[in-house]
Image (tube, rainbow, N blue to C red; front, side):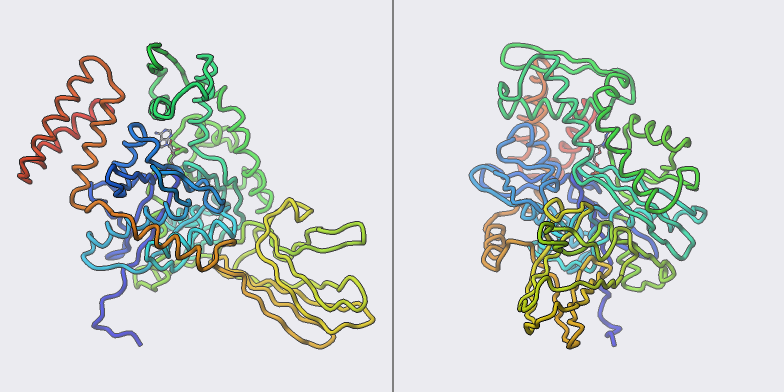
Length: 563
Ligand code: AMP
């Protein structure tokens, strides 16, 4: 029984994005976005180390990508699940440690807004995230001191938020193109039931690749190679191309950039961009076709199309989708915020909030899970599927196997995920041994996989001759991370100083002014230098109301200059 006098834990949802992250809370029968210290609901997923080694997360850090690229990291979600380390000054961090700093900043924002500590949240992940990437996300939350009540697939979270707003959708395809990942989900609304039929995607395809393609094309036109350009100049060019990409919908765009004493110009229109992006647009088609095939639907069977993720704002992507499906996509809800709202909605469902108890969601396992087998003396390492992709979860499936030779006393079970016939081409998940009493005959065994709604897998092996059963829970800690490595991560983060939340708006403006100074020239640069001096003087005066009014004025002026 729950004590009625205790406040209910906040029902929070986090969208941990490649480019931006958001936190939302379910309150008074609806999901609301929580603003950060700057009053924004989008917090850039960027981390920077200040000169005194204190951590900056969000807009201030993003501004420092141009001015201090060697002390700043962005888009690290792309490396989640790998052993990559990112250097910030003379320290190095794993992608999950950097993600923990972003989650920690969102947690702090929620605590400041709600007025009490928060302990748990639903976190969204790309549907096509592997087992290891999911484990690393859980570990990032643990490092940030947050318990994850459920991992929800991003398109499924979007579907939940849409489910609350729309009552008419039936068969729907959710096309989710974020900064670094692409997911396609086919689902059916029969409210209160939301049933996911198929989910597929590409973990290495997103809006950042479209910017990168522009960068390569523009360097080629200028006959420059990346090796000739220093880190800071490259960061400022990347920044300028990101702005150019976002403005292409308004007509042809020009870009000016200096390298040493040489000025460079580049002009691009939508048709030119389409040519550069053709290979990326082609890569978006395969997952769509696979999701429809798995759901046994043709494009004409769909009742609606929903676009999610910031990169679906690109006209080139909208056009490609419209041509493929012969209709215009439905997108009146904000593609940037819908996932966080859906994650908070899921938190409310989990907490059985009165206003939402009705919504029931069924999701699928987006990839095939199975074990390594030997088909003959020649053929080893073949992949034997046990749970096929797009099986509704939770699920429990069993397959019969045999020992390979007489007097075998040990069976090695190696678990993999993937869609290729040989295990060497799939992703290794875990392995364990089962002892058997040697016998002159080969023995039969049942291997059962049970997969729950969070993507937790349990494997049971039953020896049919004796009925003996061995259970094995797949280890939830990231592969290759022992207790010592986990503690080292924790210590690395606790050793860092964080910027006090109330000084962040000033720190962010200073970072924006420095970036604007770096990006401008001549009279404009002089004007920004004057603003920088004026703001530094006001800060030294320590009068809060004067600082706030000057800050608002300068932020607006920078917004107008689009810097
Ligand atoms: P998300 O991870 O969903 O926040 O998506 C961020 C991605 O959306 C980044 O790659 C951005 O470049 C891209 N994006 C956001 N707004 C626009 C826009 N107006 N035009 C083109 N791309 C955009």
